[in-house]
Length: 349
Image (cartoon, rainbow, N blue to C red; front, top):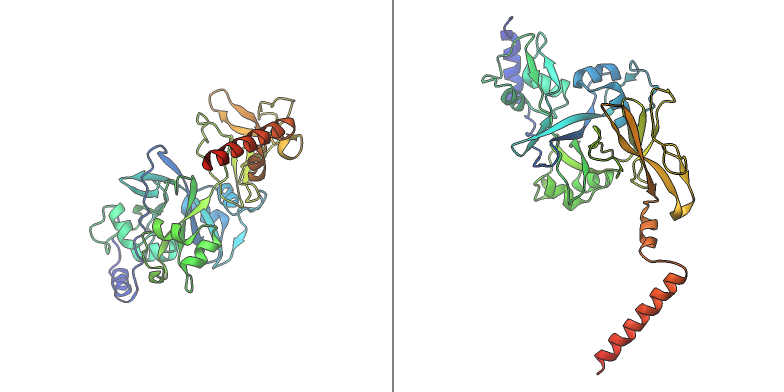
């Protein structure tokens, strides 16, 4: 193979002298129950591109990129993405020895004139630095890489619960003027959680180009653990196509309950109906008495889309469900008042 050119090596050396190396983005990942999951990279396109080219760079599907950015499914893959645009990239994540890294992808092929720092900086927006690429690929001398060489780019991610809740971990690169408080507000988390998750003791120590692990609240679902997509987690304002392209599931902050419906009317998508002859996504009843035919996964061997009847799970209905209504409520109230009077009497004895 052709050796890395000396001129490029010299330029790489000069760049290392004058440019600040981004801090290593080590995300804690101790998940034991989930071998792998999906995280998101908050990628900013350095140059004008297309969804197809970005898909090829990160080696994830165009449809998954469209879903992560809540862009209509019919959007052509050749649509232009202007320089400086934020594109959320969903990446498969795996935990190894307490650290999360993108699971075996992306694989980058070294081009003529490439250097590790340039690859990290201009191809992958510094979500990984050249020392991390070198370590992941057992490269002892970062100045010596070969044209055509295949490099695994270990992007930061995590599968861990945060405060005992399932979340989608977002890798976010700190921009000029960012504050911990502002980032927390932007992504719907709190400052203390963000500080603790990233091991930051002083919010004022935040550095530009630092990579933060930002937890995004995920929608709860009825998908059972035997389904191939049981690990599907979606944050607010995103969707995913699942069940062999038959089902579209989306997440909204209005309820944070996964909303799934048929993505295609093709007869090759066999769907179980719910009681009352409800079809996936249909609802019967109103208010807190509403029952929805919810998606609960699919079988892989003999393909079948599974459903389950789910009650209204909004927070207001859960709160009201804690207390019965009607004649039963009256009886409960009488019992509570009687116990309260007995307690007061004992206190004054």
